[in-house]
Length: 115
Length: 116
Picture 1 (cartoon, chains in turn cyan, yellow):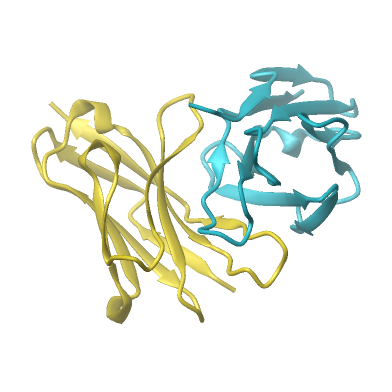
Picture 2: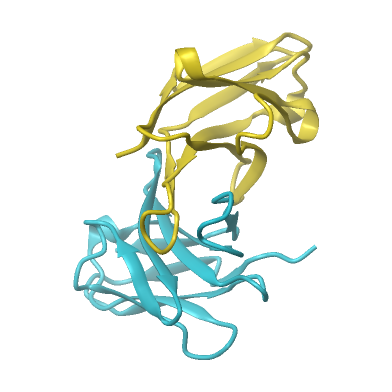
């Protein structure tokens, strides 16, 4: 069964360092998303992406964050200068059609720890 | 804006007992509603979804949920709990397609524990 894959599964970094989290969405999907979950808290929407541009972003997604689809398969989330509060589990998701049932398929997440 | 409220951050039931996880939604338009499950150290897996086709929705692992418009609820149930059901459960609502990509808004989650 097709699935969303994310790498790395866990990354530890120093505050102020740049981090890139990678995702390979399901191949025929057109819409891509990043969510995050701070330990013990709810899953929060960060950004959605379609046709090589951001469709929508939340207040969390400030200038320190960026997303990119550098080739036909990868979808990346970059944090330019990490802060302690960026420590969280980051989930990538994809969907076939953003206007369909809204069902998103999630990866297993990348845990980011900022020291 | 749409939102969901999950009543009870932690629910504990005995193995074999009924599972009931509560979710109420807020939406100005007919919503798409979902229940996702997160097992320890894993990602989010879709349990079931409501897309207006039928008010009683059956999902994986014996779970089902009923959409009640009059109560704005979408509670998740399972007749008999198994130890393997221990996980975090998230109710979610889909943003309607007024933007170019619908996003899912999650509730705060309910941790389900199963007592032997």
